[in-house]
Amino acid sequence: QVQLVESGGGLVQPGGSLRLSCVASGTILRINSMGWYRQAPGKEREWVAGIHSGGGIGYTDSVKGRFTISRDNAKNTVYLQMNSLKPEDAAVYYCKVVLMSQMVYWGQGTQVTVSS
Image 1 (cartoon, rainbow, N blue to C red):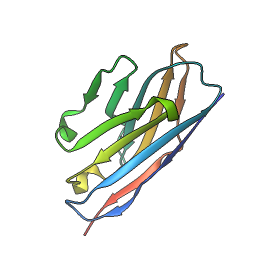
Image 2: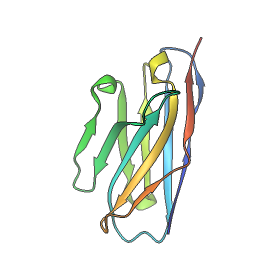
Image 3: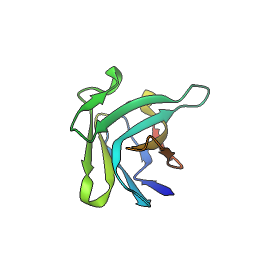
Image 4: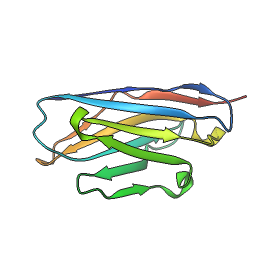
């Protein structure tokens, strides 16, 4: 069993920054990929960014150039640095981990509010 704990969400003004963290613990054999999704009220959950064990990184178009995903393998932690935040970035952000066994785990979510 794998547990994911996210942190770093909060209230920020437009143009501000936040750094989300997601720590994976438990029976972790090998992680294949780690990523971030978000879900705004009334909308479907959408993929934001992902990082593969092989080093590949991807972002959804709306966050390219503003968000940076990174990973600390020793700590089983993935980060999402979010800069130049916009009101449309407001959502609950979820961490997702896929193991080499293809098991998928989700965090509980952390709220990001962008408002003046």
